[in-house]
Length: 141
Picture 1 (tube, rainbow, N blue to C red):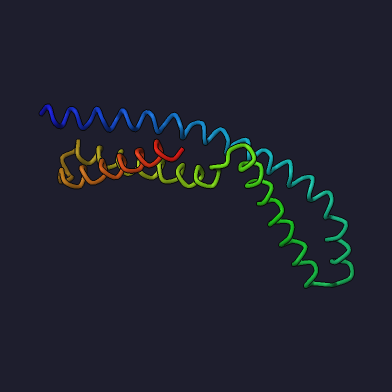
Picture 2 (picture 1 turned 45 degrees about the vertical axis):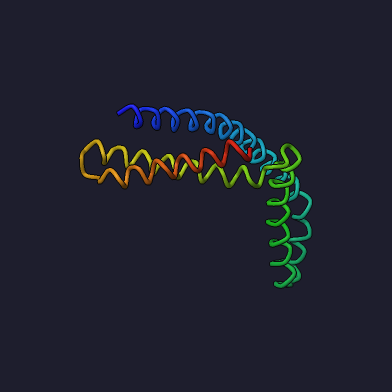
C-alpha cells in the first residue's frame, strides 16, 4: 500500500511540475498564434496585388505559387516568432501535444479503472507513460 502511495505521489509531483512548464509553453504558443494572425494580415496586404495580377493575367501557375508562398510565409512567422521568444519552441509544441495526449489517456484509464472495467496492468501502463512524458518535459524544457 505504501509503495503505491509513494508512486502516486511521485506521479502527481512530476505531473504538477510538467503542467507548470506546459502552461508557460501554451502562453507562448498563443502569443505566436497572435503574431501569426497579424503577420497573415500584413503579408496578405502586401501580396494581394501580386495575386490579383496573376489571376487577371490567367497565369495559373504563378497564382498557385504565390498562394503557396503566402502560406509558407505565414507559417514561418509563427515559428520564427516562437523561436525568437524561446529557442525550444519546436520542442515545446511537440511536448504540449504529447502531454495532453498522455493526460487524456490516463484520465480515461482512471475512469475505466474506477468502473472496474480495466485491468490494473493497463492502468499502470498509462501511468508509466504519463510519468515518462512528465520526466521528459521536466528534463528538456
